[in-house]
Image (cartoon, rainbow, N blue to C red; front, side, top):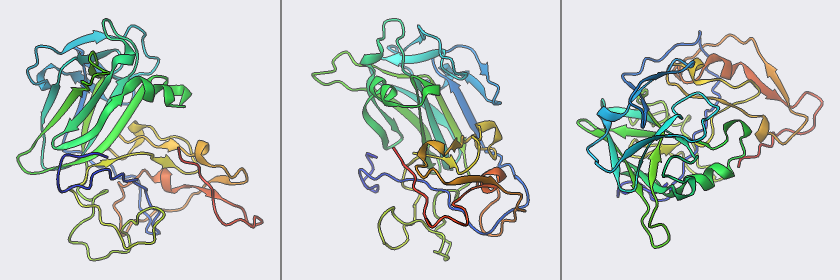
Length: 314
């Protein structure tokens, strides 16, 4: 992940893994976010979707830019969501949000198709959120074509965790890549979502002296790695092991989607099981994940000599 802050390690990629702790809870407890912004970019009307989201028009969050335009997709998306319209510009444009102090989920939604006067192959741009560069010289059509999810053709989704300090506004800036090879490039966005989150859901509490639950860098036998809130995190995978998909509407209030793990498991003999275990949390908050995440597992079976599960991550 590239960033413009000198305090952040350039090129750092963090994978957020939900660890199964043996400290289990009473029932699903819903976290109530301080704020939720769901923005239907390029549209002058609101949109309500079956997952309970209310997408609002984007104009009041858009900083003055005479060059940005809105246009409908020439080919309608088959997915419900903010994919009917988009905001475009051949020059930089910015959305600005007044938000509370603390960490936020920032979600970006793209429908990589052709729009009137905007061919999909010309979408080539960078995105900044505050001082952080989330991605640079991003080619939307190449990324969409490389996505192997048949259920979301041409749909791109990116999710980040960003921490806001007292008095900060969250400015999200889209910057077309102007190089000798991309003189006519443009930037676009279909939907933006900002959801506040608990302060130490993923970030490390600096006052916590218990380091046993801290993450380690994958593949390295190193000391625990505290995740300080001056990092911006990108979600790569959020999987429910051994169970069905959990849509955003069934999350614990933070509108996270939990994908199935089937396409990542390469050991065919692994069994998925649902358990009726009574959950009781004592160390981690019970809104960390839906109860169903803890009630499904993969089991190698008592007669299997193997003791590991092989998962393939692309």
